[in-house]
Image: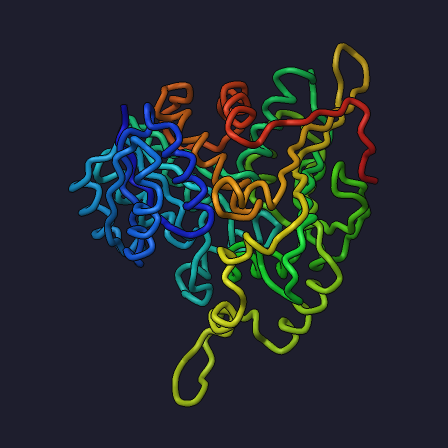
Length: 419
C-alpha cells in the first residue's frame, strides 16, 4: 500500500496516472496536482469508475518550493513523482528534502530563464570545463547527492524512455551480454504522422530547445560538440522503415559516460522529417526559438512561449497520429574474449497507445517508464539512497515491468551498426 503525489497533468503524466490506477494494490492512493486543477479534476473523474485507487486532486504552483512543501505536508505521500516541467526539478527536490520524502522525475533540470546572470555564470563555466553547451545537464541535481543520502532518501532522475529506459538497456547489456562495452548508439525513431505541417510531440519549449542546440557526443574520455543537425545518418528501423536521423546532445550520455566503465564512445540519434527541419530552421532564422524576452506592442514576450501558444497542443495529437516509434540502443564490445554486437529496443504503436490511454506513443513511452520507476521504488526493488540515474540500479525488475505493462523489449544479436 502506498500514497503517491503526482505533480503534473499533461500528456506524459496522464499516461503514468492511467498506469498507476491499473495497479491499485501498489498505488492505493494518488493525488494529482498541477497549476490547472480543473485538468486534474477531469482526469480523476474519468479514471475513478474503473479503478480502486483513491484519487484526489490539488492545486500547486511547482515553481514555488513553499507551495510544494505545504502540499506534501498536507498529503504525506510515500513518493513524489515530478512529471511537470524540467524547469521545476529543483524546487520540487528542495521540498522533498525538507519534508523527508523520496523523489523522481522524467527529465533533468534546465532553467526557464537562460538569461539569469547567476545561472549564466555557472553555465558558461560548465561549457568551458565540460565542452558541451546544451542548457540541460545533471550537475544541478547531482549537487543534491550528499543531502539526499544523509536524509536517507532516494531521488531517481530521468525515468522516462530516453533518458530512462535507454539507460536501463545499457545496464542490462552490461549485466548480461558484455564483459566490456566499447560503443553505445542510442537511436530514437518516431515514425508517426499527425498530419500537421509542423507540431512537436511534447512540450514545444523543451523540444525545440533540445533540437536546435549544438549536437555533441562522448568519445575517448571527452565531449566533442558539433553544429546542430550537422551529422546525419540513415537507418532501417524494424516495423518503421528507412529514416533520416541526426546526432543530438542528450542527457543520458553524461551519466552513462560516468557509469559504464571503459566505454569509448556514446552517441544519440533522433529521426526528423524534412518538413519538420525546414519549419524549425525558418522559425530559428526569424528569432522565434529565442528564450530571451523582446518588446512587442508595449509588453514583454518570450518568442518561444508565443510560438508554443500557436502550435498544436501535444496532448491533442493522439487521435490523429498513426505509425510507430522505435527506440533503443546498439552496443559493441567484448564477451569472453570475442567481439560482440547487441541491439535492444522497443516498438510502440501510436494508435494502440491512444486506444489504451488516450495518448500518442511519445507520451506513452515516457509515462509507462515513469510508473515502472515508481513501482521499483515503492516495492523496494530499487532502494539506493542519494541521487541516482536509472543505470545505477538493477535493470532486470524494471525491464520485466516494462515487458508486462506495455513496452516489451526486442533484441537483435546481429544488428546493422551505425557508421
